[in-house]
Length: 419
Length: 191
Image (cartoon, rainbow over all chains, first blue to last red; front, side):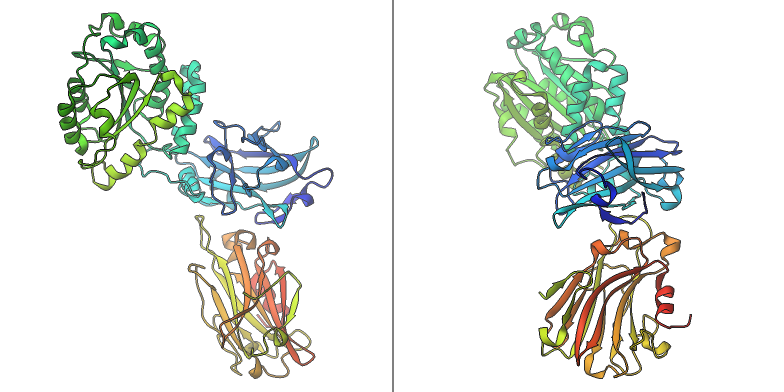
């Protein structure tokens, strides 16, 4: 059967033989001249995305309940397997969306459809053309929703000129205001594609980064990412066993996502400071062993001199027009507390956020206290400690690394530290 | 909160609220949250005889003719976007003043310029009609149309009608695809 734009009807009228709870939705948009990203949002009764695990797209292919799963029927751009009986009662709507990137507008599409398949055949189709739309860059094509104990379908066909960002906002997400407005959402969403092409080993990590970024509403943020590695003597075993190399591998997808140039700026410090060549998808795999003749030749492994490296990082980023996330790895033994505190208090007026990560050590001194001290223009420091970098899952690590950065971004914008 | 009706349901206004003399018919819908042309929805009323037709064009109350000659039906103004809380448009009906040859007052909502804007009721959310007692402010009855409104561009939301010497209200929820013009012709208006 043909479904007209705006039509509302029970699913049981669409899928007449067999249960109307198990079916596949197929989505197709042709002649757009631009990549189209499809997604399914599982929303609550207020039509908000209260559980981000219910944004189903190529980076998150399945809901935890298994009720929605990415799966394209033969011949379609995209699609979803729906098993409505598996959905928790809190999910009231499944909204199927399409978004385009760049200068493409939905009225330029030639033809498209949303169709229902069950038991191996097509049951119903909502067909549309560019004439049905205007300047939208993101569309809600259809909505499957609960009403008085039954599931219904509405061929909504409405959208937003602001694209995916506006759509996510409509569903209750907060999208951080852009620093440079040239950024496009899809260039961010294509992180996985970018990594798959150049560093396939990191794809799995890239997926986890994307989930954390979605969660913390950071998918549209562009930032520079710097990594400061403690290379004092007590870190010897961590370098020797390849643990620091794993830090690089875990953090690179984050940098690739955020960074304007896709590079992770790296410093090592002990008594002195060494600015290393940036880690990239091209050189990451043996970075610690190879960069600047390898870690054994860096002249490190003595005492830890944090102020020197902090000053060096400040010099590098003080004029940055983009926000900067510095991830600072330390195994503790911090003694130059007054100096560190003075430097970081001064640095609160700069576009730099310092995320300190304590690893396997103790006596983090002022690094720990800066997280909660309030005598600065803005709170520009975060801190958390782990027994071992590997004591938490990658997902948990990304979540923790990204938890305070968005708060700083907001405050720094309000105070005019960031443009 | 008044009695909630489903499509086709009716209640006796006189029995439900014996003090009801002056009625506010409130009509509402949500403004679109999406981009594109706004939905401009217009409420109108047709005062019709036993045969379902108006006596003359002056029995058609709409944004360009906001009050009936007899003064019993009055349109209180147009809201262009549906923004704001509460009813988007309302009409006042003074039951005792409705001429005796008028059998029913039909309340409709139409989407302005629907064809050009490619809009229909399927894209309008939370449409409703409710009957309030103008003097007490109490809601007497309410009908939520959302699921009954779909690909149409004009809809009869409800009607107030005479029945055995009392006034009743019916939740109609009947849609038409030809906009206000089709509705007007159906009720005997010459356009």
